Length: 156
Image (cartoon, rainbow, N blue to C red; front, side, top):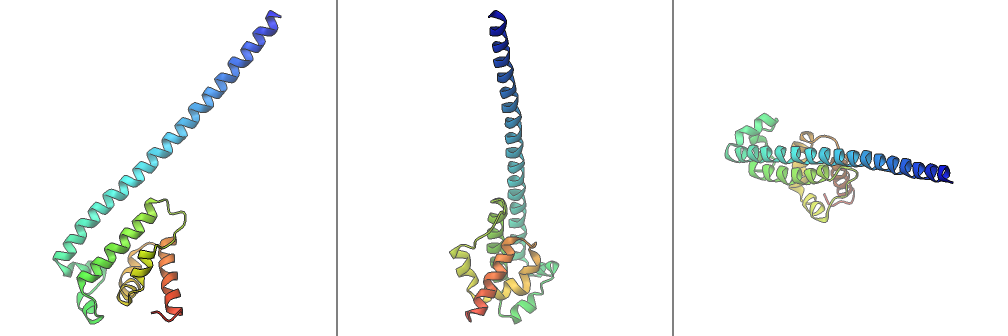
């Protein structure tokens, strides 16, 4: 009876040790993912801080648009001011950042974004000047698809 009882105690002790080890491994995995996510978000925040600085520089000196392959005179011919282009870019960039920081699993354009894209000038700027400045993601594909939907419906 004592031997059987010792065997039961050993088995319970072994089971508790195994469960503790599993819990420790799970904690390490969860902590690692949290740290990776925190680094990702911090890198995006740093990136957007620097983008805000460059946006301010563009607002002060429109000729810097040439570094992005955009001729200010061509903008004016298209009926778009450099300030409008910079505003549209900042707005689209903010929406893209929200998608990326959110994990980028899928994207649904908000009503605000759809309303923004209904503006002829916004669509023109996106297609002609900004689209190539954004990496291809489900977000950019959603923007492109919505613009095509508007044009197919005759709203463009």
